Image 1: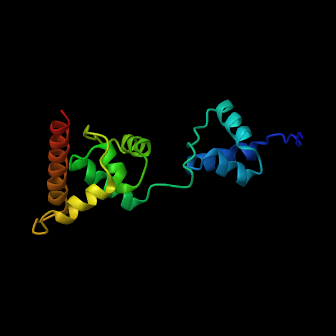
Image 2: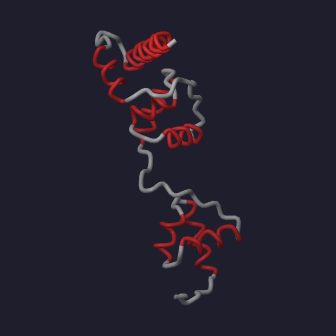
Image 3: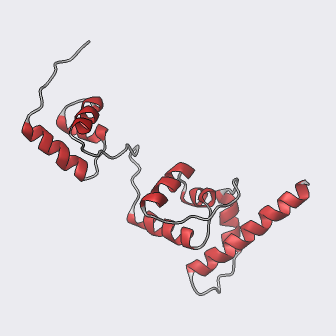
Length: 152
């Protein structure tokens, strides 16, 4: 069934620009403007209005940004950070790019359980969380190397 086609008015374009500038994605804007996401995308392309990609409702909080920065600075890899933060590797990679962070390359397959186990065993006498993360990074790297040599 084809719905009624609504024409666009200048105030609609202004609302689209404002909502896009606020960081809303096409689905959110469509709900607000009572239009389809496809109509929003087409109109934004026509007027060169950048629209955020859908985030599936999982925006990054300020605390998550801080945690991502700490883990990146401590030298953790994308798979390690993703496991720790319970985010997908692609979400971590994308958000690190948005924050212009450099992420260390690492071995895939690090699990959150392994990270938590290493973190709980790490020395609590270290002065700062970044020192604990550095120690954790070294212990995880060492276990990966020992597993690879055993496999050969």
